[in-house]
Length: 198
Length: 338
Image (cartoon, rainbow over all chains, first blue to last red; front, top):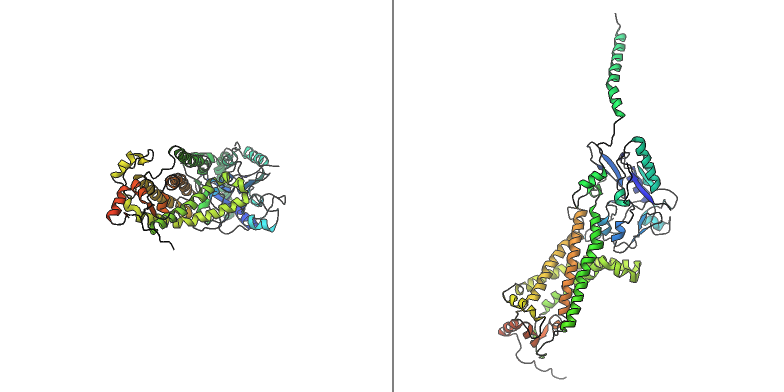
């Protein structure tokens, strides 16, 4: 089994937000939740870069460490998934996550957040693969169909890469070699405790 | 004679030449141009962050919270929640339990030395007991559900399995969120009805000097309605309770604090640390009010305490009550047989 990862090549991202839109459409993500977002750093200044960010499916995931009901699990592909049946909506994963991935459907007060929602790497949840029960809670399961996450597949500049960590890292390295520059694999140090030399 | 068309041709040629000359050096430069020379690097940005700060930018989706790209403070919060909190909680709560067991083994149950007189005096009226048990009842559920959400995964989940534990924790969370309100009501009422008897006074120094008579038999420092120890418990409950309530409000209304996730991390830390200390303090209070001292529970049970207990522990209060004509001087009439 592969160790899948996300990699956003910030030197290619043109902030078109197609990944954000594709994700929302693919999974019928509720209003107010964005499993993926594009953040522009140094907007309007020299050296501006845009980074598409979602759950990075961390090695030693902080969300899983702090969850009081242990609703997170890591698949054989190293995708970090969670069970909405177990989630109590306490918000701890949101406090611990470095990437702001966990979100809650209710913007309600009195501590009512509802069940946490986050990027599933298009891999569904604990329900049986490609069932409607799974779709309603977690969205579609493209991994079970043999496809990669829709955000990366849709990316117009192939900035966002998804797949086996070693393969996408080698693609990125090749790009850096060829064009002579690269601003780094954003979030890799935090998520995977490794980085790609650039 | 040059025709207009030849003039245009000459001009065009001159323009083309000028353009070629102008861009030639620029094109030569382009070969060495490094577009990331000035580009933002994650490492630089992360290193420049202050503690508790976030790396954020601009987003086009209408949710400003999503503009945070990376918040390294999550790691510190995780370290607090996983390592520091169990340590603080373990030392405070298990340490207090151990101290109480030790105290019981050494000192035993503190008896009414003069023996029970059979005559009782009203210590707490219905309203006092109602306010006490409203606050205490809420506190017990809040404490158990709070401890469960912090440590239940380690302690209780292995016993019941994840499904049953998750529904227990879910109900616990609901109870925690909603019982906070009657708890705050109890706290406010408690302050109003008891604050007048809990103002620190000179007499408390004597009580503290004698260790409250806790550690030696036959020692009963004089006290009014509340002795120095009870005053300390009162102020722990009031100040601790207000701090728990304020920090809890911010967590109950997660979109209230302006600082977003950083503010919530701060308030959970405050809430959790105070909570374990609060629980430890209340364990001592519960011990001395029940198992630890003969006759003490009646005060909050029936509200009627034995006169000898009252004389030993609250001598000045008994005198006050007698002066007001509220204390019995003779045994009550025997209940007539039916």
